[in-house]
Length: 188
Image 1 (spheres, rainbow, N blue to C red):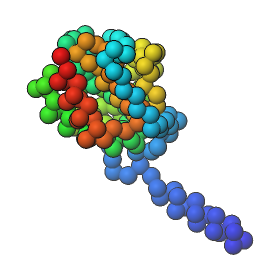
Image 2 (cartoon, helix red, strand yellow; image 1 turned 60 degrees about the horizontal axis):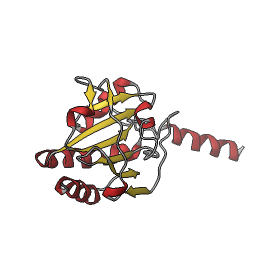
Image 3 (spheres, rainbow, N blue to C red; image 1 turned 90 degrees about the vertical axis):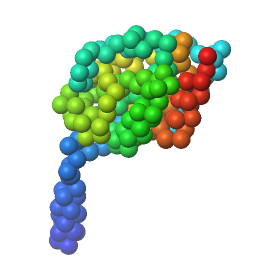
Image 4 (spheres, rainbow, N blue to C red; image 1 turned 120 degrees about the vertical axis):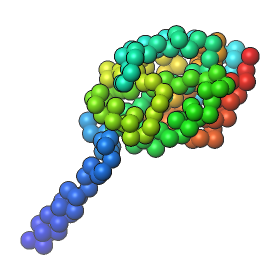
C-alpha cells in the first residue's frame, strides 16, 4: 500500500510539470523529439559544395527564396518550437543577424515538424526578425544531401559563392558563430 501511495504521489508531482507560461510548446518535442549532436563540420574553400536553393512559404510574411541573397553570406538555421536547444539559441541567432547585416550577411530559418501557429508564436516570443521557411515535412534539409544538417537544431553557413562553408549540428554559441560569420563575410 505504501508503494502505491508513493507511486501516486510521484505521478501527481510529475503532473504538475506542465507547459508553463511560455507561448511556445516547451515540451521536449512531444512526438517530434529533437535530435542532439555535437557535430561541427567546417569546409576549406576548395572543398566547399554548392548549397541548394531554399524556397518556400514563410512562417509569417512573404514567400522566402534564398536566390534573393546571392552574393551574401547566408546563415540557414533549422529549428522547431518543440526543440529546447532551438529556444536556447534563438537570441544568439537574432543578435548576430542584427549585428551582421551591414557586413552582407543574411539569415533564413527553416521551421520543421511544427504546426504553423506554434512556429509563428516562437518567432514572436523570441523576437525573430529574419524570415523562416515553413517546412513541416522537412523537405528543405533533403536538398543538403552532400552536406546534411544532422539533427535539430542545425545551422549551415553558406559563403558568398553559394557554397556550404560549415554545418553545426547542435546548438550554436555566440562567440563561435559570430567569429565564423565574420570570417566568411571577410572572404572575397
